Length: 253
Image 1: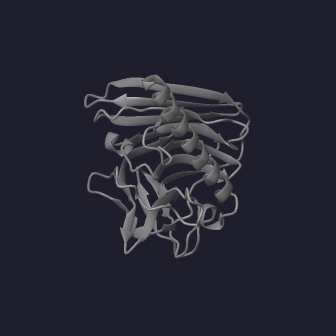
Image 2: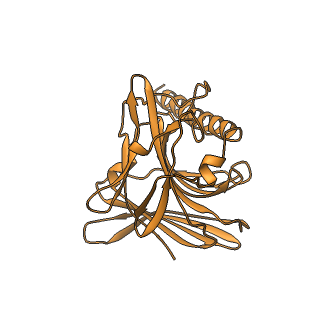
Image 3: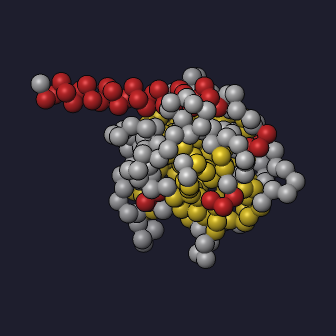
């Protein structure tokens, strides 16, 4: 009986994650892309990790989520680390996103984050990815997609229905986390490492997929809330995890 109960709970958790991802994918196709892809006059620009980034800002909900995005939720600290936060006030939550001024085609993209950033709220998504449009996207996403117990990381190449995401659990050890995307003309590869204080790395997961992707893309970093109930705005935080993440370094070569 106990084994049957565990099996039922596992199936329910997997269904919840799948529904959350599908709802996001369906919603995102109808959301405005201009604020994501095209830099606008007067946009806030910051420099982080030797790269210029545009801070996404909106007064009404836009994708992903959809959510309201605020420049007040983004800053670079004295150590040169980028902070992204979700803030809620009076029942209204705002999220955070930055994306590069420059576009890239092919190369190795490395993201180093504070290990505590893995422990975000189950209704939040922390994305580190390359983006052209909704059908041309290379993602590392940290999220439990609304489920209490589920893998907390996924690698995915959009469109998702052609290339199912690769999900796995990344342990919270206190070590920094390294994600590497290697983008080649006929293949995209992912790796995830834990890095200790001495700089030693331990490989946790790797995955690759044969795919032709040649669209020039910007690097995006974001922290946002999923819309499981489909009411047109991200759900409130569940209160079981962090609402701020730290990106220590981003590099491309």
